[in-house]
Image 1 (cartoon, rainbow, N blue to C red):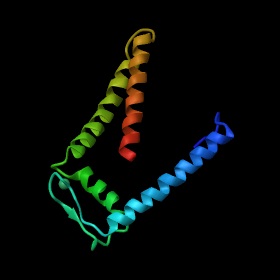
Image 2 (image 1 turned 90 degrees about the vertical axis):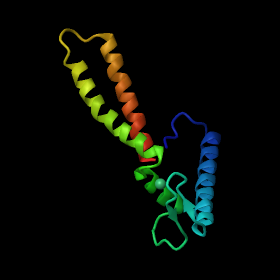
Image 3 (image 1 turned 180 degrees about the horizontal axis):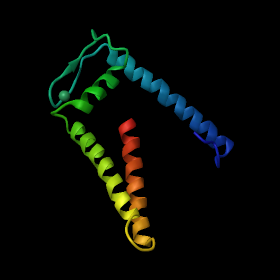
Image 4 (image 1 turned 30 degrees about the vertical axis):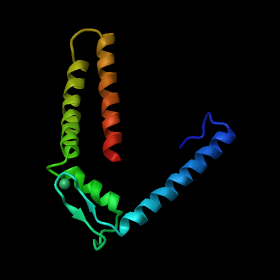
Length: 124
Ligand SMILES: [Zn+2]
């Protein structure tokens, strides 16, 4: 994280909050390590006997991304399809005849912003 533009006090607050998030995330992982975690859409279960090297939350997240019953898998597929189509649309707008138009630039900017938001969401 860039500290640019923040006061020293604000930087200290961000550091403290970041440390709190890391501590609490580890705590949740510890609490979930002795539990079963289920996908509420298909019932797939991960249990404390799993030998996965990731947290239960990460195991469930990986399952949800590919679960045919969970809406997240459909959203991810739609995001990938939008990503593919956006390249076609952006290319089409850029190769339109005539001088560059402000509305074309707005379309390209909107496509890029949406693609960046999708890429960020998919990485989570
Ligand atoms: Zn599932």
